[in-house]
Length: 397
Image 1 (cartoon, rainbow, N blue to C red):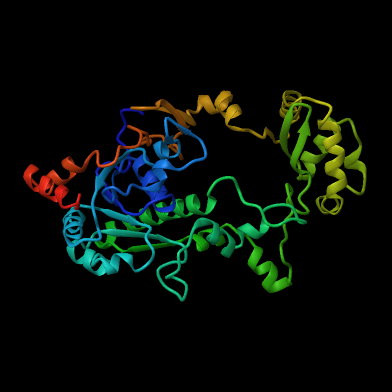
Image 2 (cartoon, helix red, strand yellow; image 1 turned 90 degrees about the vertical axis):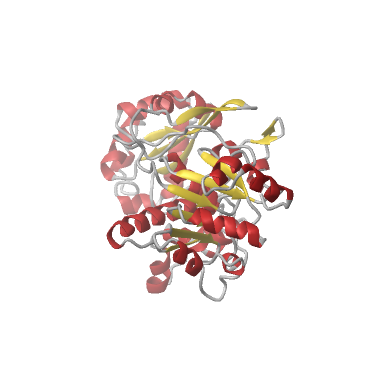
């Protein structure tokens, strides 16, 4: 952190929902200074608090990241008293983020029509699997389903096997990012109109946005993209190559780069008609990759990386967490930061991206304990200690 003012200082965000897509949007807004009030049901915390295959002291290691910079308020939105409290909080909010199944807020009497009557400037960001409209909008939609509907899942993996998946929840985080982008657009529009609006972010549509020219390729040319393993078809050389102690990525598909790669490897590949042009390399991609692999296998990663750098050829390591924690460039840019946690101690985690020169984001603190800020948040709209005690006894907070 620096002493600079963060760009979203003074922005109040109410985050409803759970797991990843909606809360990731809240994380991004909080990273840049927004006050994010995370609402969870009393006794029913966000399952993300305990998520992850690896835990320390029975604490999920994802929660300190996605819960960072947030305040925790427990509130039962299924009862009228809880709904009334939320309506009071909405009066002072700038943004409400939710990722319930469409129709849930409306059933609770908290739909956009009600919330905008209370606060016409409110931006309501709604994250869901299928969007707020359409014949499938009512369906539950996890990231895996959205990745499949949006075309991504079919493309991942080897061509002779069932589709694979990435080792992280891409559909959720991509949609959370788009939701944050839409939120900022709506806030910018509010500066002109004075009015808030609804941001409708669907997981499957977010995935579709990343599908490049897949749709017109089929619609106009009858071409269906297939799984291609570690390569992009007809883009060569550009892939993963084994070394004696690991793997590297080399990208030299441009003609001038390939000529340098050929010389670097001590070959005359660039003079061979089978590899001399972009199209020719695409036609003979597999055999070219095999020849490059035979060259890299005889060398260490450090040797290959240094040689590529000397020759101006894009190349990088295929990192795991261990290598990222040891990477000098990552350290120099503070791309991994350490945040104090009351139980876990210093927790290393990815930093705040992108980097702003004058008003950078930052992480003030890690994730809150359940209901940690309930008393202070409710004191704002005037709930006394006695009133809060009564609400707690009733299971409202």
